[in-house]
Length: 155
Image (cartoon, rainbow, N blue to C red; front, side, top):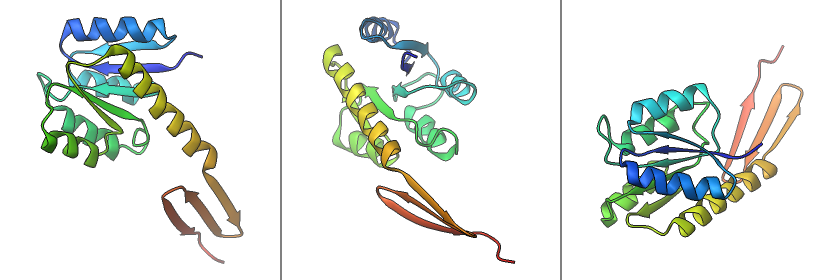
């Protein structure tokens, strides 16, 4: 199955450039010009990564990213911001609210593809390392950066 990239971007020329380069690399591409359309699609369909503009006509990409991170099913979905907002404060905010990378326009399509592949490789390694151990009513769920204990009901 080909990896699916979802582009949430309202500039048609950017969408076509990105679409062409990702299809050439074997990706399936879905694109949406409005944040809520992209979010609705992601809630109903699978995707491997999202390329998200910040300046969208209906909402800003920061809010869309926050909604993705608040959704239990979508919180681990990698997000790369692809935007004209290149100030340090914007880059830092994008990464702090859950972006996995931040690419400023104008950008190199080859570099963007390479960054997407790198983020997806990291995501695969995290999934491979995740370990869940259950002993009786105790469940240990170890992620690389988080250690959680969930204790079930004891009789």
